[in-house]
Image (cartoon, rainbow, N blue to C red; front, side, top):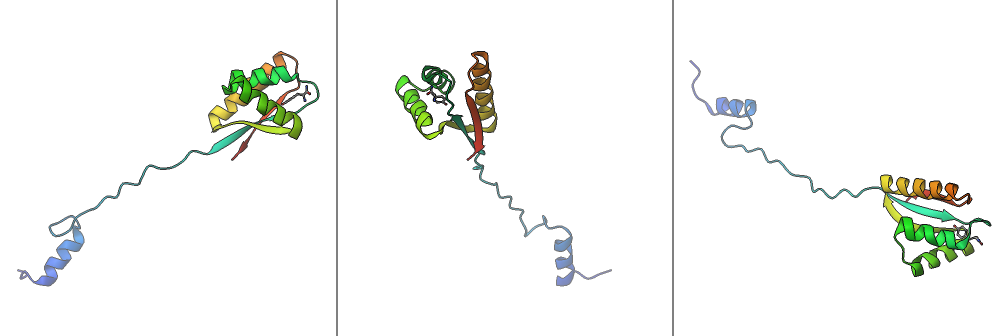
Length: 116
Ligand code: TYC
C-alpha cells in the first residue's frame, strides 16, 4: 500500500490537469479579420463615348450623374480611375458586368481590378 504522500498528489494532478485545483481557460479570438479589398478601375480609350462611361458608372457602380461625370472625366484626363472598392467576388462581378456591357455595345472600354 502506497502512503498518500505529497509526491503522489502532485503525480495525480499532472496526469489529470482538469482535476481539482486546476482550470482550463479558453480564450475566444476576437472576430475582427478584415476581408481583402479590391479596387475596380476604368481605363481610358479614344473611342468609347463619354456618355456611355457615365451610364456604366450610374448603372453598375450606383453613382449619381455628378459623381459619374467626375470619375469619367478623371479617367479621360489621367488614363485610369477608381469606380469603387469591393470584396473579391463583388469586384470580379462588376468587372464582368462592365466588360460584357461594353462588348454588347461594341465599345473598347476596359475595366480591371487590383488588390488594394
Ligand atoms: N476618352 C473617351 C472619349 O474621348 C471617353 C472615355 C472616358 C473613354 C473614360 C473611356 O474609361 C473611359 N470619348
